[in-house]
Image (cartoon, rainbow, N blue to C red; front, side):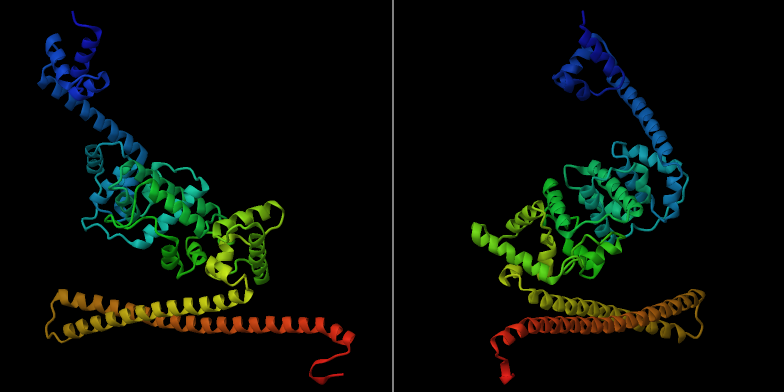
Length: 455
């Protein structure tokens, strides 16, 4: 007489379960399951296959109904944005990672939407850079994931880009969905809270941990994502971290830039570095950046607020320079002036490159327009092409003029900034000289001696 376990095996097989699925939890082989089914007199292999097909169809229909209820008019919105069917199906695969591809294809087919038949859009780096910042902000702030429906609003390039990041990792699609939900949540959080921000040091620490946790390394056939803070600053902020954050609508009041906010002066920075170096001389502690961070923490606990470690490092452009200069405030001024000049020069060069490209486009369009104009009897298609090229040339010429104007304005602003900075330095020097002179006058009067043969 068959045991209760054997009867259970037969019922599972009859309901459509595979031999492997039945065997695994029982710790037996699939062949042993087959033997039990044959012995007890269960369903034939053909009947089991038919039952599995019915069960699979039912599951597909169930998944299609659940996705349709979740999406609402979402598919219509994606179609109106010009996405291809392939792009829509990839997005749904990320939104519903546990759903079989057959259910997703059936849902899209039944939607009755007309999707774009063009090739997939190329991956735009800027969108992925912005997404990287949003994701790390979500981790830093502990922002909760948004619902899967929020993924409908994300740029298609971001959806595909993040999916590519995890394509060769063990996390796969499941983690892709989680990351995209956090990106969407961070975007919404920033829209409602203007105080959200992140320092570049904190960003890089979170990035390093993320790459290590997921085994994403340089030199394995893909570019590490999220990008470094230097890349973010260069691509979104023309070299400045604060400018990059502003481009994303983030708060920059807590983000050090140069000497940071007006809360601390150059003398405060000099005093901070000087006091730290004195302390290390007494305690024998090293002068590493990590030791400096620990010292600042002890100072803050003692009620002596100081500029933050990133702000000090930014003021001197490097921690080694801060130590090497002994905290000399003059070094801050020199570095700052050099930074102003370097940033302006780099941006002006970028405008020059842009102008050259635009001018080349104008020449190319002009050559084609001239070629079409010389035709004695242009076809309808040639006339349309001529009109389109003429409009395009007008647009590029306007862009070229705007580029040249922006370049001239930048050059003027850079010159004004440098002049203003030098004026400020001269005024500060003059003030310091007058103050020093006022301190020396009583000393000279007391001793009855004046320099240069006075009194």
